Length: 236
Image (spheres, one colour):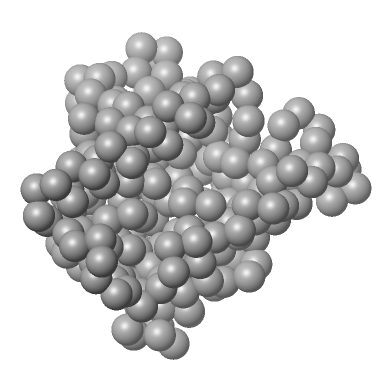
């Protein structure tokens, strides 16, 4: 089974498109956990999803709730304002089956802004990934003290633990850019928060930065070149 966690705080306007992209996966053995993080906008999820409510504690706490309550051996995450490309789950699941040594499979992503869409690229956005459950047992969950950069922080910790990540070339995720994006205009601050957490792990002796790892970090994270190349959505 693949367990899909969708955290949402006041994202009712995006609910239909997010769930439609889940339905378009045609991966039958799945469960959908909609973690309602204190929404006040009249969110009304369908009966086909597991609706979990909690006081507003942030996206990381909502994702961790989904991990704890999920039943699948494979875990996927979709932000409420993003959508998956059809076939995303099947392609990444197949990659993990072919590579039993791998804990993460990741496809490419594109950004959608109005009627403009970027070329495909790869960044540490967990919506473009599929995880084995034991990755979180090894590396821990999402840092609930972080309001930004929690995706990148998790990937850093997976790299530090030498978790094998398989790259799938097809597009998995369409990341929707809009005025309500949590991280909009905060990339520098987010990056600094992630690096601060890494320095804390180094200083405390949790990791040795000189230890040789199987992957170069730049290869593990991916190639962002396509993020600067845009075309009309109707022509893509």
